[in-house]
Amino acid sequence: RRGAGPQASCSAVLRREFEVAGPVKEAVLIVTCDNGARVFLNGEPVVTNEDWNQPSRADVTRKLRPGRNQLRAEARNSGGPAGFLLRLRVK
Image (cartoon, rainbow, N blue to C red; front, top):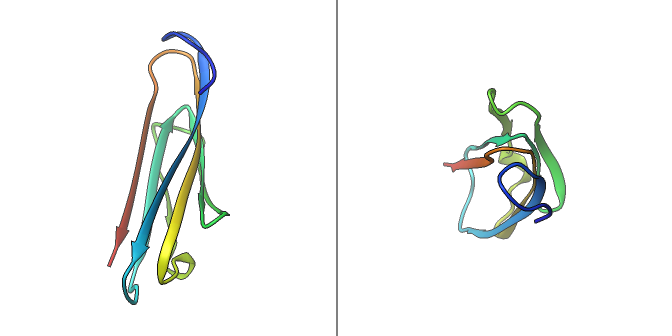
């Protein structure tokens, strides 16, 4: 995290590892971030969100692999309160 205080610009790198146990029928990723974010799945860019008022979505069905997977988000804030939300729905 860079920056300090509620009015400062800052950025963060967020990571989450998870396991996929079996075949994936569908996987959809939705993200929003004040003020923007880039999301990577297993090191590959999958979606960019530039407007926190409008969530971005990506079909990542073919990008998930059996076993361990990693999501990484590079999030940034341009001052004021910040927020980040990512949802991965897997069927």
